[in-house]
Image (cartoon, rainbow, N blue to C red):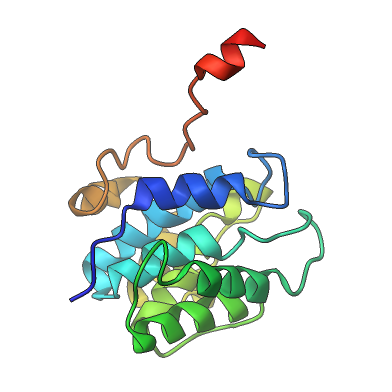
Length: 186
């Protein structure tokens, strides 16, 4: 059994290392948090590997270089996860391959028969409202993702994420860095 992942520490590290500087870009940490929350809601019903789903939320867009056309960003995110594996988190090889595949193909993949990869992709697609698009049930890989997309809001199911997240109602906002003594003196 591997050590538990300290997600808050891992998040801080990944956020501080992102190439796209604006924390509030449409592909930034606020989006990653919503994807994590969505994934936790979905995994409660789909049975997806929750660790892979949560790591996908963090890594899938973390190496974006811009908010526009960036076709290799998923692969770069998977490569960054590979760099941090073993130091910041441990995953079995089979789990890591799921994470890698989910990150690499999340933009161009349509449906995936693997429930964990499908849950990852659906968790991202359920946040399309941030760019003015309505999630379409026919593009969801899981029946639960399609049900949520068809309803038009994840809100009635937010409570399902409580098993995995401290505060799913507010989890979609990335916390601002606290003032440190160094910053206050500048």
